[in-house]
Image (cartoon, rainbow, N blue to C red; front, side, top):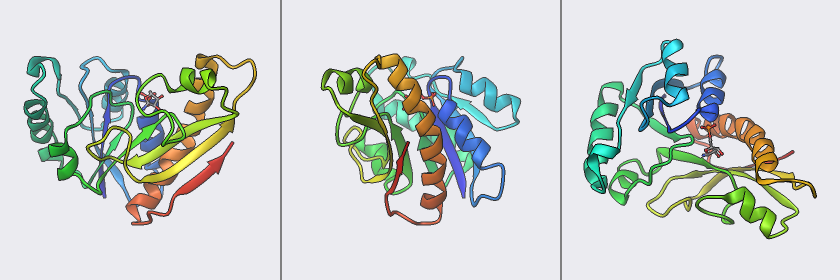
Length: 196
Ligand code: GRF
């Protein structure tokens, strides 16, 4: 299977996925795409000979459909079977998520359905949650809301800050996402639950 990976930033999740696909794995990365030209993940992928595409969302203003048409055009030559969103910070409309229904997954830094959206670590701390973590889910038109394919959970420490918690969650993201992708490519949709 050919996997497209979308990112907007450093791409640590993309790197974890690419490195896991180097070995005995049913999938290969076919393209790394970003909406940000100087995203660290784009340079990293280029250095490793992985095809990259940049589709800057800004020229499209609030015309999400036009941006998504440009995404589809950029993807076409790479013929991905699946899309992994990995720190991709643009909302996708139902037009795009319907096209990729069942073939697009995302990692989100919370134990969904808790804390959809942003600032998840601060919100977990504000709520005094004892446990926190990350989730991989199928992408649907509703934000951070599709069927859950896997979760990794960890204990919140009394002295945690949003930054310290985010750092520990990110380590679990790099465990969870590659493990879920392997199962997803194999057609296994049973949720994978990891504990740190
Ligand atoms: C991570 O917190 C991830 O959960 C979220 O984007 C953040 C940055 O990810 N989706 P990465 O280092 O760019 O993969």
